[in-house]
Image 1 (cartoon, rainbow, N blue to C red):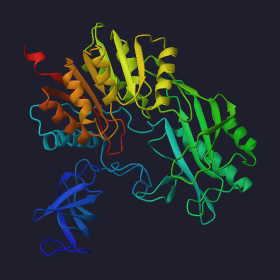
Image 2 (tube, one colour):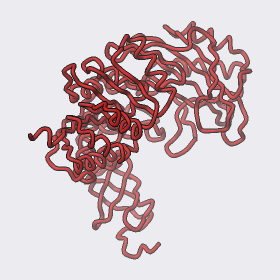
Image 3 (spheres, rainbow, N blue to C red):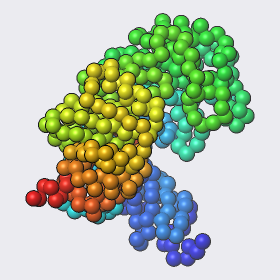
Image 4 (cartoon, rainbow, N blue to C red):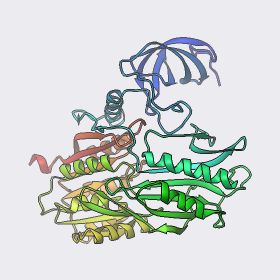
Length: 462
């Protein structure tokens, strides 16, 4: 690669003004219009940086010293923050995190979507931006003959041993302590990814935030785990409100955490929790939003944007286990939820049944195939809600939606970049984005969720 015109040299130090933030929360600075990405730096700072990688159009720098600090810089409360891959922006105050997330959404809407006049609200944050996750999955391993349970280091599968994690519920810390004690006491082997040998692979803890129910799932390579009774009794004795202890068997040499077989060791095969007034059964393998407090905020915003009066037919594309569909059903005449994963649709039907919601219908299939078919059959939606995966919506689905002329589209997004791309497509199809509400579902990380209100330009200007 010809780097003759690159104004920086690898392994050389520079003083850099940090003028922006990258989408992973890294600082962005320029040297003679050459962009450097610097992990740990914050917009508004001046920093001494060592260039560790230089490519033709951009490079990467290592933060050596902050020579002028941002007002948002704080000391991370987690001792392994710099080594662990779980959080990216714990060195930024919570006010600064919310500001960063709003700016990220604005940048995507303007730069990728090239949309003007869209109202971007301040990010809806949490009262307490710690201990918010209701599920944790931790790899179990061994380093220098010592048992370690924790998180993978950034960009590796090296386990960082932890005593506590500030974004998980405190009960996880207790389970980790008990698990280590049991493994050490009985010299139980742990799985090694390189040799493919060993028994114990992961420990998973789930908690119902409104019910207090606790589930502990031990993931093993096979079902013959020695001295399991000691583990079961310890968990029951030392942790309150344990409703389920499960052994999950994963014999495959894979990165996938859970296997398909679950053996209930104690209690039931599920725990219960609520989002709003709706109750959900959560099994080891079922999907459930990991931040139930902010999920309620997100769904209520989607319901507000849908602006339902009780007379509307609503399509919910990518409906998953039907959580948004149930919220919409409170104020809609009829909701049709569409999802490609058959198991998710089974869960959605169960969720509707146990909550006595009868004005929803769930259909298995690709949204881009099922929704045009519903339209062909004469079922017309007044409002369409989409909650796609990170890659966003298929263009064919957006075209089918626009062709059916709903009054409003509500777009729930977990990636501002694909959201902006899709809003630009809808703009060309006659649908104008009115406003976007960022919601902080994952404090201390660079992730941001959004709800966008999109209106039919022609129907609203008649």
